[in-house]
Amino acid sequence: MKRNGSRGCVTRKTRFGSRERDWLKGDTQRGCVCLYGGTVDPQIPASGPQASSTPQTDLQLVLCSTSTTVEELCAQRDGQGLYVQLHGDLVRRLEPCERPLQMLYEYLAAMGYAEPVQVQQEAANSDLSCLIRFYSERPVNADQQERTLLKGVFNVRKGKSQLHKWAERQVILCGTCLIVASVKDSLTGKMHILPLVGGKVEEVKRRQHCLMFSSAGSQAQTYFVNFDTLADYQRWHRQAAKVVSQTVSLVDLSCYSLEVVPEYLFYSQDVTHLNLRHNFMSLQGPGGLLNLPR
Image (cartoon, rainbow, N blue to C red; front, side, top):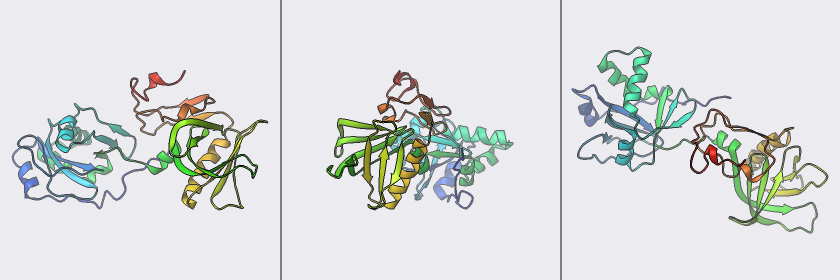
C-alpha cells in the first residue's frame, strides 16, 4: 500500500524569535516541537512548557522540555490529544504519559547525533518532520477516508419502475453494502441494506451524475442515486466498482491508522473476511475489538 509522506517539508523552515532563542539557552533539555494541524494558544503559562508566539498556518513551534508530557501539552493548548507519524507511514495517537521532545531526542540519538547542543538544534528544525512529525489533531487522508466510508444526502429512487418517486435520503457506502435511510438526514428510522458483492453499479446515461446500484441474485434490489457533483459521482462509482467486483465479502482496512471500527461496517451481515491489521485499535470501549459483532 502506498504511503503518503510529508510534502514540501524540505522547503518549510521554522522561524525563531527572541523568545524561542532565550528558551533554548543554557539548558539542552529544553527544545522545540514542531506541531502540525492545529492552533497553539500563544499565551504563556506561569510555569511549565511554553507556546511559541509565532503563529503559522499549519505549523506551530511548541516550547517544552524533555520531561513535558502529552497530557501537559494538551492541557496548555486545551487540546484532545497529540499524534505522531514516522516516515510518512501510520499515524498513532500518543499516550498521555509520552514525552514528544524526549522522543525527538531519542530519535536523533539513534541517527548518530551525540552532541547535546546539536541534538537540540536539529530537533527544532521543521525539516525533521519528513522523518518524524507531530500533529495536534488526527490528520485526515482523503483517499483513506474514501475507502473506509462514503456518506451524504442525495436524491434516491428505489427500483426500476418509473412509478417510484425521487426523494432526498441519507446514503452510506461502507464495507460491502449500500445503506439508504428511510428518512432524510436521519439514521433513526428503518435502514435499507443493499449487499453489493457480486452485484452491479452502472452509469445512468439519461440522468446526469446518476448511478444504479443493484444487488446480486434472483431477488436483486436496485437503487438509483443522483449525486450533486461530478466529483461525488466519480468517488462513489470508483469505490462501489471495487466492491461489486469482489468474489467474497472481504473488507480490507489494514494500514489505515484506525482507532475504532467504522460504525456502519456491520450493517450488512455478509462480511466473511475482515482485515484490521496494522491499526491502533483498543480492545475495550466503543468501536473496540472486543465489541465487534460475533
